Length: 333
Image 1: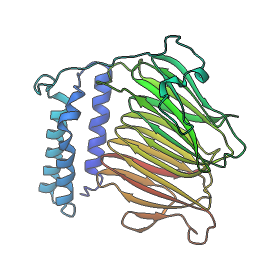
Image 2 (image 1 turned 180 degrees about the vertical axis):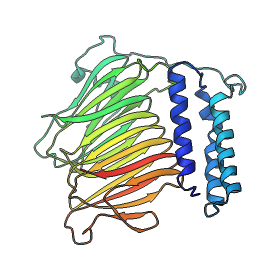
Image 3 (image 1 turned 90 degrees about the vertical axis):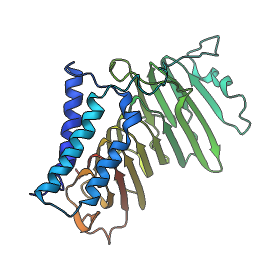
Image 4 (image 1 turned 135 degrees about the vertical axis):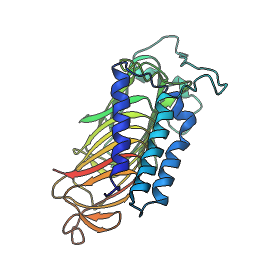
């Protein structure tokens, strides 16, 4: 009996089953447990690494027992009141007395900037952020940060950057500046306090991004628990970096430049990456507890995969994947 897929599969089944039962009200999952019991994932990973090459029935049973006990504590343990920490909720602060909906007049929240940065801060409700396009915007770097949200990018804009948001907690902040010859854009949460109520799925932040197709883009996403759906096939992407927690991450990439670098690091997540059928691609994978699927790739050695004809290709994509439990899929279409 091969156990290399048994433990990742069992973990995914248990996570999916817990979400399903929680959504239908059959169990009440205490989300705060993850904050205090996260070392369970280290224990599960350590047991699997210690017995990585031992496939005896006794060892397989031990691995299964460790997973069941660990997730039993996570799912059914009630430690909310046992750690002595107070319960926090999100608070909202609006320093803009005019409550203007025009983002061009909202940069007084960042008066400390003396280097040409334009800052915009919005609070609970619906907001719009943008940065104008300039003809010399050949390279742009976008940094996105903040969890507890749904991030979508599947459309273009005549501006350099645009974002439409619906906000139920926290404050979004956006700034843009020109640094040497690079246009730098920063979008993320500010004054993020307390905990997000995961049980209320109807009240989660949503952000719809739009980018200009002309620049070469470097995109860096730092998130907690989010649902991310990025279609980058229309854009010239030089680098894409995703550091995520628990969540669902779907990324579609277009044709690579001379060199396109993609770096994915995620926790208990489902990661799905789509690349063009004829793109030359190299994958380095370090996902000990994850279920991996790299259709259309030839295995070079442990954790290393390539498409046919990669060495002779002019334009190449390099994907580096690391993470804990979950699934990591790269497919071509």
